[in-house]
Image 1 (cartoon, one colour):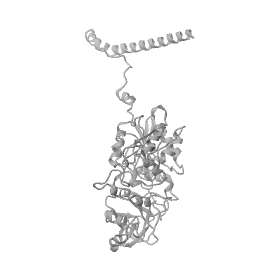
Image 2 (cartoon, helix red, strand yellow):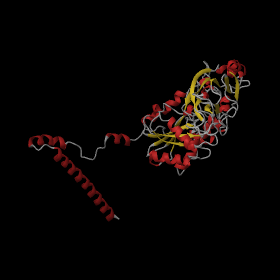
Image 3 (tube, rainbow, N blue to C red):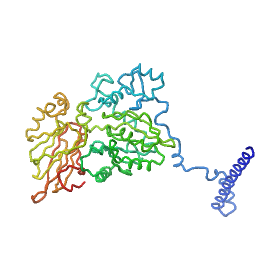
Image 4 (cartoon, rainbow, N blue to C red):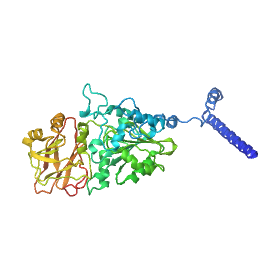
Length: 498
């Protein structure tokens, strides 16, 4: 054994000497190549060249920065709730990560804090809707206590601040978009958060799109909608519930990751945690026992949640949802939010009668669409996942009075007349003048956080240009977008184009 060790040591020393000789030869070759043939300049340059470090020992600066150790985003000694990522504490009730002192002390003694849920996550897991983010009508009035029941425990600015280190860190970004609310969940300014990192766009909740929808056409349409973001390397559509598209998305993520951290990013309630739970078995041989909580309440995740599922030290991160002020969900109370959440596959509804001029349609008491001018062939198709949203119709001349009298009573949501008064009168936000083509959809009027109205035209014998003018009214602060029509099933036209 000693002889073998001696022989191995000699071989190692010989190899080291050979490398040193090779570097020395390369240095003298460099001196001979770039030195001046005149003796005097050569003698002047020789001391400077000999002072250079041996060639091959210094890495280029970009590679050195790339290989430098990264500062941990989440300290390993931090004890956090595995459901939301908030640091566990028993001091301030109503704050993120709060646990009852008795339960906290018991878990601490048993060394089970890392396997524990905070009080809020325990209630969320039982089906309660507990808003976490103070926004819209949940903003505390002056004098309200922090952590007051139903008033939220953090702010959109605080959650956005958690994501800012992403732009300084090489990573792959999986940007998730809710296919039932693309206008309200596609982040147009995502580059402010992720810098120049590559983005793989993933459309979630594929199983909720209407029957007859062709995923390939929707993927092409989504690629066009995301073109303004830039740096999108691929687009995939998935369903965390049925598993459709998950394997293809997992392969694409693994191929594009290239040793970097993977961050799941998206708007609030887009389905990041549910996607993570479905993705892990496909990218990691050993699934962690405790996974981030998936709930229907926006703002479930409150901090970065790292998961060790890759080799080489890189990690998969679940992130807090980005809260956008222009979404309808930012204006609703928890009970009203439950009325607008998808409960199953979307069923587009097209009124049988033509949308005549001077007619107004109400989506519950939350949105109003006026038909200002239109040909008889105009058809409006209402697409939303909220099963409790009902469509109401009345003359435009009586629309304001009808809304004031019925919103919160017959037309819900809002949940009651008091909530309707607090929400305020509907505001005219968008007037769209659209050119119609027979047998095609012209455009979508997308109400952020609620759904969209697809504008189409049936076959007609009418000659000349066909145009329609529509006006959209929503609560103050909610945005309305005019976009190319989303190619889903259930539309009244034949051969609709994206």
